[in-house]
Amino acid sequence: MTTLRSLVFATLMLAATTAFGSADPELRALLLDAVSESASFQDRFDAEVWLTDMSTRLSRQVPESEERLHILRQVHHEAARVDLPPELVLAVIDVESNFDRFAISWAGALGLMQVMPFWLNEIGRPNDNLFHINTNLRMGCTILRYYLDREQGDMIRALARYNGSLGRRIYSDKVLDKLRRKWFRY
Image 1 (tube, one colour):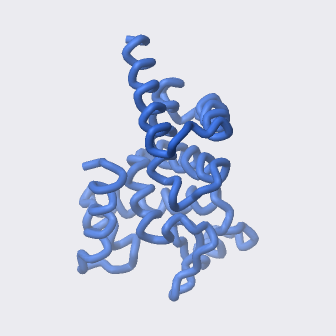
Image 2 (cartoon, rainbow, N blue to C red; image 1 turned 180 degrees about the horizontal axis):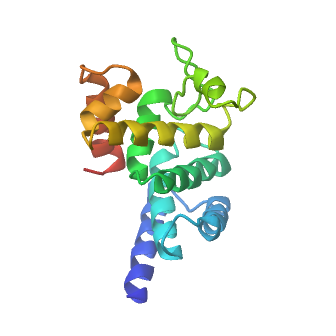
Image 3 (cartoon, rainbow, N blue to C red; image 1 turned 60 degrees about the vertical axis):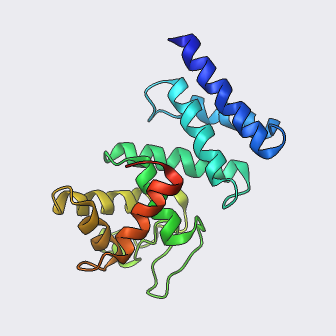
């Protein structure tokens, strides 16, 4: 089994190397550090494979490797904390902010997952910063999980509720399309 895992990881690294011309030694070192810090993964191999794969997919939107790996580790951690597929969270972020952690919507939602700032006052934490990756992902994943539970697992309705567009499918379809086409889940 370990030989198979090593072969899969080597194949992913080769694919990443081929896709970008040569393996970035800095990225490789960061990935190895990220893997050792990734408590939300079942084992180191799972972390290596997932982080390498998702980092390759995210590299155009977040070119800086340290920030990209920080986002991916936190997405995986927060998604696992509330039992969400991390790829779903990535798809939501992709649609909501295009991975711009400083994004501000026309309605005033902030950060990667476009969390409304009124939540900070609601929970008695008005000084928290929604542009902070960890804070934004913690709140966004918690809100998404809540809506998924409230809608009894109905992903279409939960996503629409998250976006404030309950009764319309446009947003949900965008997220699920991103999930299928880019993040390869469902």
